[in-house]
Image 1 (cartoon, rainbow, N blue to C red):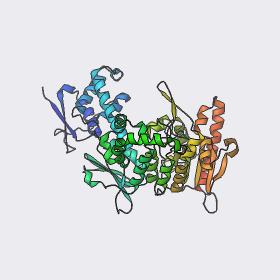
Image 2 (image 1 turned 135 degrees about the vertical axis):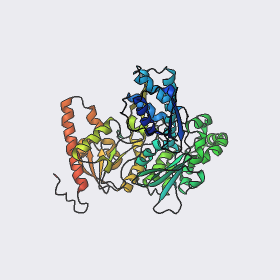
Image 3 (image 1 turned 180 degrees about the vertical axis):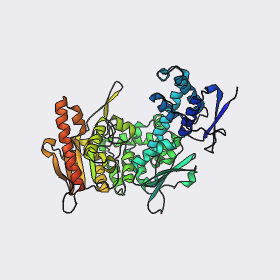
Image 4 (image 1 turned 45 degrees about the vertical axis):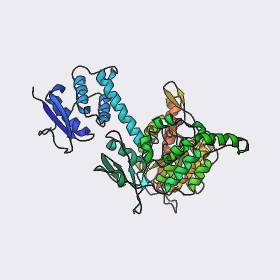
Length: 480
Ligand code: URA
């Protein structure tokens, strides 16, 4: 039996694997006739070219699994994936639904490990300022378990689009220059900058919100594994805090009677304001370090868009999808908003989208996480961050989507029925309209259609106002 050798690029070579699969399927080569190896030289395909064999149609769940599993460190990953592809194409089309099948099960565990690694990278990577660099540059060191750099990097482009940054890892690096994302060679920890002044703020914040009475080192380590601690400024305080936790609890009990009302993170956040975040990245670092006011959210969902966008849209709080993906307005309401923006010619990628509250709050019902509206107190808690965000983005027009956004921007509750249309939020030119989720909740098609038309009319005015000359207020000639 002749064995067919396929050599793919070291790391996660999704393109190489896809091309190889096309070729192998076209030549009807069963898995037992194929040996998979990796090499640093990307174009070694066992001395053969793979040409362009016809595409292979695979169920979506399988292509998703492939996308994840190619990032796994297991040297057998390509061989296992090809076995799965082969079986699906040879009579077992529903194989992916059989979770008890040993191969499906093993690959699902691998996909899950990669997803977990990605989640950790998104949550625990910390950029540090590169000393003296102009324009300002940031770099982060991270040690992922799997080959996830290329899968993880676009997330940071979305989040820190306006910064120059580099992510350094032992298996490769990624660089964003505000226009293009490029990948480079592996790095060493020493290549990353040491701590910067901003980290002091994070540490101070973490120390002051740390509740010694709730110390559970085991849970803490499983949420935030120790191997990531050294890259996260706020964790430098953890060992000391754990050691002194019991004394601190006793002291707290002793002081209880004399202590003022309640111990809040506000003072620590105020202390961080002393450093005045000068970029969205610094602001977002504060929000991330503060964590959710109500526990449960996966991560903070920051604003997204060009830093000096003409229009800034403010929603209420991230929903289930936003919480999982770490991006604002990507769930059903977000899709409706994006569609409506497109219909009136507002390019979503040129607008800045954010929320009054930066963490998802929900009620668990079975497997479902049902959105729960933020209270006025929660909106107030997040308000200074929103106002800072507004100052940093400096849009020509800020749009409140729904009553919570009005409350956050105006600092007081005003019903939409009274405030809809042009508005002033302090010195900012504003506009008030309904929240897209309101349109989704309307009971019948006719009401929905009318309300959607009215929403489109608002968006048209928003489009025109955002293009108006900021000094004269004159609209461009083309506007309606
Ligand atoms: N609703 C919001 O207000 N914001 C989102 O990001 C998603 C849904």
